Image 1 (cartoon, one colour):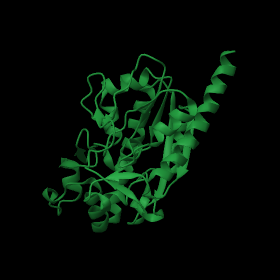
Image 2 (cartoon, one colour):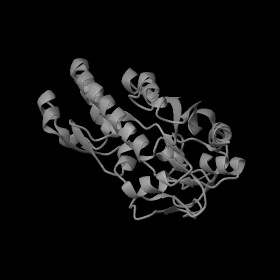
Image 3 (cartoon, one colour):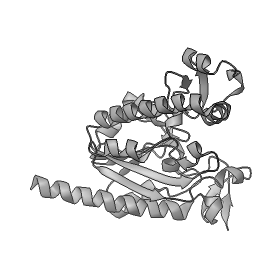
Image 4 (cartoon, helix red, strand yellow):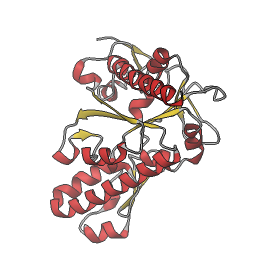
Length: 279
């Protein structure tokens, strides 16, 4: 195992913002005047601690500019509510959209941070009525809130789960519509420690939910992945001395290379299909 010990912000390019958006996405800032493919997603797409994220791998294979519009801790609401960034993605030839967890969307039960969607902001009245015994000031993260609610009452938690899944589906449909259907969905699946409801990523997103969206898109790429700590995938990672515990839960360089290859193959197939149809 080897990795470079540098400051936490040592990745080349840092972050940047596009077209009036306030969201800091993976840098360096790229030229948007030539045809490109856009990639929207969270920490995995951003490539935290990884010098060459899979977006760059796909670009090298496709020989087409691939613009990384991902942000650390971003969720579905991050992009659904950012008209400027959606505009950048809409101008792309195609957009790859990571399937992000359903726990990190604002809904009738609670509000999340508008850009760091994993952060819990406020319980709404319906949630306080459903779980009156809970002190909501104790929670800072959505998953902590939801696992606590599930432990208190599986039956009442099921009401919250169903609503989150319905909200996620509606929000995904909005994003796909905003991108005019030129979307390839990316599902990175890996096991998580926790109860059954939170044991797989993307959290609370079922196969049926994904299938309901496929006809509206250009397709789905599903890749089963392992975190760096599980498969000792640290070679080439760049991090500060205190970052190692967090890096164990990230995707390492080998997994990024594998995902980039899988995406490039799918995107190449779509390009060939489009050329054949236009001919």
